[in-house]
Length: 420
Image 1 (cartoon, one colour):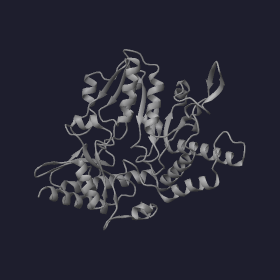
Image 2 (cartoon, one colour; image 1 turned 180 degrees about the horizontal axis):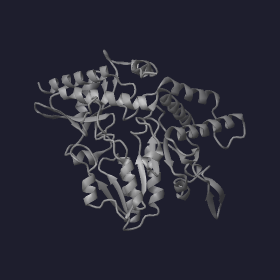
Image 3 (cartoon, one colour; image 1 turned 180 degrees about the vertical axis):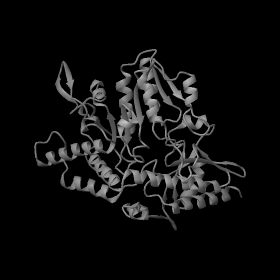
C-alpha cells in the first residue's frame, strides 16, 4: 500500500487539536511521539478485561495477563530481529536500561580499564558511565564531533581511542540533537576486535528505522516505548543471551530470584533476573500494539517518509534568515538527507543578537507549532559547539509538509517580532 500520511493522521485523534486559531503542528516526536487510537484502546482493554499481576496469580485473569505480557516480549523480539524472547528485558525507559548496563557491566571494571562514549550522547548515556568510573577507577574517554555533526573518526584513530584497555563502548545510533546516523556497525567491529562490549542507545533509531540487532553489531541495545507510538513507562534492553546470563542482577526483589534464604539467594535466568517486582504489564501490552501498528504500515515506508520530510524541512529552513542548523545538512540527488534522522536542531539570530530557544519555542507555540527548546539532555554537545541551547523540530510518520510550512511561517513571525 502507498504511504498515506493523511490516513495515518486519522489514527491519532490528538492531531486534530488546535492551539488558539492555529492547527496543532506537533514537531516534538523526538521528545515523545503521539499515540494511535489502537494503542490506547489496547491498554484500556487490558485494564478493563484482563487486569491481574503476572507469574503469580493462579487464576484465569492472572494467566491472561501473563500470556499478554510474555506475548509482548515475543512481539518486541520479532520487531528488532532478536534470536529469542529471552533476550528482551522490559525496563521503565531507556535510561533505566542504560543504567542497568552501566551498573552490571561496570561491576567488572578496575583501574586502567576504559569506557568509550561520544560527545553527542544523551545524558542517559553519559552520567551512568561517569558513575561507573567513580565506583571502579576506570577511565571515561569519548569520540569528539566534527563541525558538520559527525563523529570525528580520524581523531579517534589518531588518539587510539578504542584499544586493548577498552572494555565498553556505548554509542547513540541516531543523535537526538544533530540527527546524525552513526556508523555503529563499524565501531562495533572495532570494539569486538579488542574484546570490548558494544552498547547502542537506539532511542531515536528504533522508532525510525528497520532494526535488526545482528546487523547493528550490538551486544546490548536500549530503546524506549514512548518514542515509537507506544506508552510511557516502558523501555527495552535487548542483549545477547550469553552476555545477559553472565551479568549480575541490577535490582533485587520479587520475581528476579530463584531461591531466597536468609543466608543468601540465587537468581532467575534472563530476562526475569532483571525484572524485579511487578513489571509494566499494561505498558508492555501497549508497546506490542505499537509494534503491530508500525509494522502494519511498514518500517521501510516510515523511514522513507521521515527522510522525505526531513529533506523538505532542511531546504525550507534555508529561507529563514539567521537560522543555523546543527548537524549534517547534505542532501542527495532526490532531496533526502545523507546519514541523518528526523530531528533538526537550530539556533536563530535576530537583528540584535541570538534569540533564546525558550523564546523561540514559546512564540512558535503561539502559532500552533510544538517544538523543544533547551539542551535536549545533551549539554556537553552544545558546549562543544559553543552554545548554551538550541531549538529542535522533530518529525515522524504523521508529519506533513504543511506542518513544515507552518514552522517556517512561525519562525518568520518570531524573527520579525524580535527584530523590531
